[in-house]
Image (cartoon, rainbow, N blue to C red):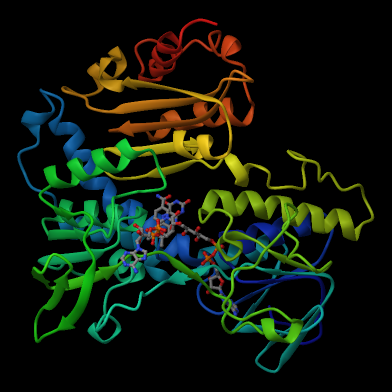
Length: 470
Ligand SMILES: Cc1cc2nc3c(=O)[nH]c(=O)nc-3n(C[C@H](O)[C@H](O)[C@H](O)COP(=O)(O)OP(=O)(O)OC[C@H]3O[C@@H](n4cnc5c(N)ncnc54)[C@H](O)[C@@H]3O)c2cc1C
Ligand SMILES: NC(=O)c1ccc[n+]([C@@H]2O[C@H](COP(=O)([O-])OP(=O)(O)OC[C@H]3O[C@@H](n4cnc5c(N)ncnc54)[C@H](O)[C@@H]3O)[C@@H](O)[C@H]2O)c1
C-alpha cells in the first residue's frame, strides 16, 4: 500500500467510491496495474452516507406498515418501532464507518491504494501530498458529488443538515424541516416520519418532478398518511437558527420552526480542488464525457459516476465503471474497441434506459422515458395506465393495495420506451421493465412473457390487455 517504490501505474483512479473501485477492478482484470487514491473512506458515499444507510433507516418501518396491511399479521404488531434498534442496524450496514472490509477487497482485487487528497498536476499525473503518481495509460476521475446548498438567506449560517447528517444521525430530532422535493427529500421524509419525527417537506414546485406526475402525487399522499406535512409550490425565503430551533420563513408569508433543517436540493460535483485548472478544465464543473467515459478533448482522462452528471445513481455509475475499465484495458492492450451503441465499451443505457427506485411508501420504480420526456424527444407515443390494486397478486399482497402502473409505447416500433410503477413493494417489478426497454422487446413478443399467477407481475398482462392485442 502506497509503496514508495512504485509510482508509475497503468491507471490512476481518483476516488474509491463504488465507481472508482469497479473501474480499477476491471482494469486489473484486463491485465493492467491500477492505483486508487482515496481521501476519506474506501467505499464512498453509497456505502457510508447514501444508499446503504438510507435504505437501512427506511426498511424497518416499511416492514411494520406492510404487516399492518395484512389482517392476521396486523394483530400481531402491537408495539411501536424501536428507533434505537433501527439506528443500530444502520450502523452495522455502514460497518460503523470503518472501511477495513472494503480495503481488504481492494487488496484482494490486486489494486493499490494511496490514502490522501489527490490532485491532477499535469498530463497523466496525480499528486497526493508529496507523492507523485504517473499513469502509463489513463487517469479516471470518480470523485463523486456533494450536497448543494442553495443561496437562501441565512441557510448556511443555520448549520443545516445535509444528506450525510440525515443518514448518519445518532439521535432522531423531534421535528425536521426538509427543503427540496427530490429523491433525498422524500426518502428522508419517509424515514424520519417513520421514526415519529414531525416532518415538514417544503418543495418549491411538486415532488419527484422528473418522474411521471402521479408518482409525486401518490408519494405526497403517502407522506401525509405517515403524518408529514407536505408544502408544494412553496419557497423558503430565509432560515435562522435560534437557541433550540430553526425558523424558516416561507413564500406564503407563514413561518415554521423545527429542531433541524435538512437541505436536499441536489448535488454539486467534487471537482473544485482536484487540479482541473492544470489541464485546462474548469474547477467545480461537471465533467463532460463521451459514451466510453473519456472526458471530451482528452485521450487519457476518463470520468465515471456522479462526477459526469449522466445519471447520479450507484448502479449506473458501476455500469459506466465496467465500460470504462474494460475500454481502458482494450485501448492499452491494442485490442478492438466496441464503441457502437450497446457495445461492450459504452454506457448507452445512460441516455434513455436508467432504472431507479425511490424507497418511499408507496415506492416508485421507473425505467426509461416518462410520457412527457418521450413526447419531447419526438416519439409518437401511446400511454397505458393501470391500477395495480386490480391485479390479484397485489390484492393478496396487501388489503386495499393502492398503486399505479404506466407503460409508454413507441407507436412506430411497437416497443416500450418507459415504465413506471408506484405502490408498496413495486421495486422488484422493475427489472422486467428494464429488460423490456433495453431489449426493445416488441409488444407482440411481450404477450409471450407470461407473468406467474398470482404475483404482482401480472400488471404486465393488464397493461398489454389495456393496450390491446396488436
Ligand atoms: C442520501 C442519498 C441516498 C442515495 N441512495 C441511492 C440509492 O438508493 N440507490 C442509488 O443507486 N443511488 C443512491 N444515491 C446516489 C449514490 O450515492 C451515488 O450515485 C454514488 O455514491 C456515486 O458514486 P461515485 O463513486 O461516483 O461517488 P462517491 O461514492 O461519492 O465516491 C467518490 C469518492 O471519491 C473520494 N474523493 C473525492 N475527491 C477526492 C480526491 N481529490 N482525492 C481522493 N479521493 C477523493 C471521496 O472521498 C469518495 O470516497 C444516493 C445519494 C444520496 C445523497
Ligand atoms: N433511491 C435512489 O435511487 C436515490 C436516493 C437518494 C438520492 N439519489 C440520487 O441522488 C441525487 C441527489 O438527490 P436530491 O434529492 O438531492 O436531488 P434531486 O435533483 O433529485 O432533487 C432536488 C430537489 O431540490 C429542489 N431544489 C433545487 N434547488 C432548489 C432551491 N434553490 N430551493 C428549493 N428547492 C430546490 C428541486 O426542485 C428538486 O425537488 C439524485 O440525482 C438521485 O438520483 C437516489
